[in-house]
Length: 388
Ligand code: DOR
Ligand code: ZN
Ligand code: ZN
Image (cartoon, rainbow, N blue to C red; front, side, top):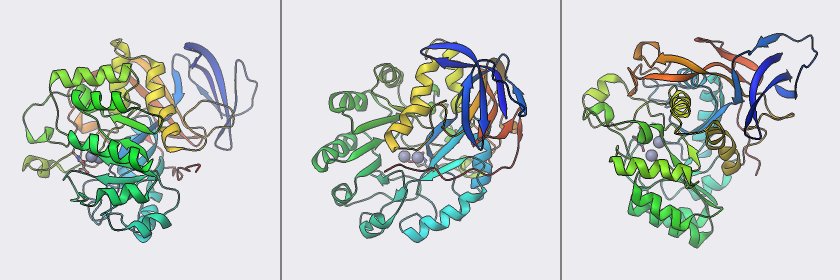
């Protein structure tokens, strides 16, 4: 197919181009391409690389009542996300190659591309060493959903090269110290405080990366159990430090930490996590309209940096030869986030009622139109390939 008259960002400016897609890849990007392929007229829309969400919990297994790979991925596609990296704190957790293979089977329901983190209890090093094509090993240094908090953290750093951590406060320093000692690549999930930003600012290197979430950037606590999450929502000063951290390049990525729970579970309290794949990009596009971000920055945070950090093959850029993972965005479209219109199985969002300007209207995954103006086409995604 051919996308005509899309505006794409080139050297910081939007230029009108056609994008020819053949065999799921971007074949050519140019002005006025002549082709007999099926035409998608993108007049008035901006084309950006598909969003890569480096942090989702698509549940499934024994928690498929919360979310499964089909519903989670439909929600992702509706939010302009074309690839997700899924966390291992499932029920049961992903601690062995066998567990991971079971998840790979479940993920075949996904309409977006998928990659996985491997879990650890501190003692499953032989299994981790056998695992192939994973984003990183996820180490929980705090207690949260799934009860995977690891006692013997050092053993994991010593034996695994690529690590993602759920660390808060002092544990951020501890994770960085260990990563320096054992020369790890370290991905610090959901950084949420000024103190953490300051630590990372001092320690930043080409092996230490930090993620922020939309909820820590855009949400204020309403003191209901629906706002319960880990890390919890923080003060205005912390939020400001996160925004500064984005501007200064201390924050490398925005991950949704899409962590769905059923409404009844949330109501009864003590249940950490909120859904987020459907609202990540609209919130960022709205922030572009409010001049808090640039489109260039959003593409760096959500497309280019995940590729660089995790070594993802053939994605993150609108370039000839790359996978045709593309989002068409209407930067001026105003729409309210509504629980009733969501694709996530949990059917609620902490952003319900928020009017946002800037929405994805079409999501193309491997050259297939998977989300088209409110409708999902059930065409399956593929595994994400890590090139190392
Ligand atoms: O709020 C959270 N929810 N924080 C986590 O660390 C885990 C996540 C989940 O899986 O529910
Ligand atoms: Zn976490
Ligand atoms: Zn998480």
